[in-house]
Length: 320
Ligand code: GLU
Image (cartoon, rainbow, N blue to C red; front, top):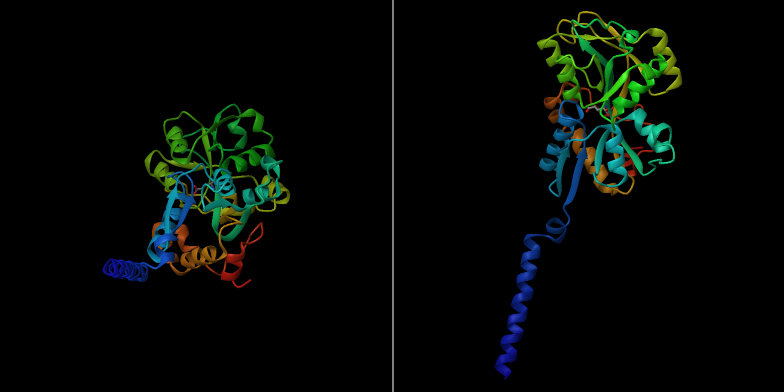
């Protein structure tokens, strides 16, 4: 009997020692507390998707306790909704749309997304209105009565298209078509639609492809409309798409730009947000390899054009 008790006690101690050993090799936090960081981006033809995928790669390589992946989406509005209902942990979105969402303005009236917090702004997103090189369309009035791709349904592009077409007072006179960037360009190439709006980092891969293939023409926004829109919507900035950004499009074209930014939910942990921001800015070279716009992302410009409160983790990181 005594022997059995001794064996039992030795057994218990062995199990205890073994568990100590296992916990020592695989510390509790590391084995159980992996954070999933799903990144809301855009369509594969855009800039968000390659840059978001680059961010996932940075997190997976440099943050051992983070497992990350980028998912395709319809763009800004879709991403903001997914941050709000926590389907994704980090997302890219236009700063104008983030402002409307947080404050419950325009399409977000009655459904303000005040769970949103800013991490940083990244690079300018330029509004392109693209037609085929051989198209008879040369200005906005030529779009009347025609099919125009205004972006994906829950994109920021669709919001910009609506505001611009309304400023020209032709919104009711075009036939809107809702498509992602690659599909939009395919439809222009095949002549099924007259034009497409894209709010995207330059050079836009899909526009480059169209330009190299059947030829592309950019429709400039007129100066008076630019001024009107800048006055009405504070996040628009007048910019130029320089001639030869796209092959065969020799002239500079006036248009408007907003900024791409990173958003999270206010409930994402401060420490995690701090480390995500730190990983991005310490390894921004990875993003520069993925897309030209990655080269524009810098610590110095990270807080320019932030339209809503910063997440406390980002505040700490940027020393605010
Ligand atoms: N800014 C675009 C939108 O929200 C998406 C841009 C991109 O996918 O690069 O519509």
